[in-house]
Image (cartoon, rainbow, N blue to C red):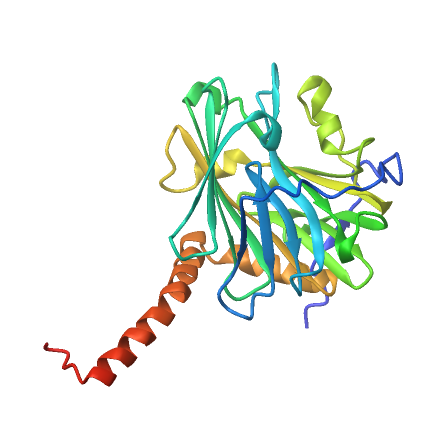
Length: 306
């Protein structure tokens, strides 16, 4: 029997300073859409606005577990953009009858475009954010992307804790409070991760001054916390079939009743290619229409040859 642990804690720069962080608040009440999966086995709902994911709800639609999750984009020299504040956003559904959405977020100066599709895993309580960043090759080589997540587990921002963990060589961010836990991982891997307290040691404040990620705190305990991971875009670049002026990746956030459960859900969701997950979502949407059509054909006595 293999007795090696499934994951190990990463100490990095130790516990983040500034506990418990600023007083927690919820995000904007203005929403573009509410989404979920068709299958009852995926007990997750999400809202979105201002070009990003807002609340995640699990296991019922009245229990929020996340405040919001968006990307920070920087060239490491002259700007750091926050999606919800700095980019020009347009919204559409991925299908007329599917509860999945697509955001196209553009740099006001035309230097890059970030396209995101947001769906729920059809069979697990996992949010999937499939993203594509496009820019001229010279600009793209400079860009760095950071995923910034604010856990509000068990319906509140206070009293949350988080650790950076290693799962089979991949860095993952793990948070918990009470009976609930969440994990965030990405298909291209995080090159660096950090846990911090909002308003003091969070990733936004880290990048704001010099456009570089200087903090890599391995934990943040009992407070209003924010988790940040730097996406390994070199891995996305080297994936088969990727274009010189684009990078693609899928980010997953899984929620469960234990750390092990949330990690297992998240990793399992990323193992399945995104296009396959997307296809399952659209298949579930069309299935009721197929059943109804078949029932009408039988009721009317129509022959398949008619």
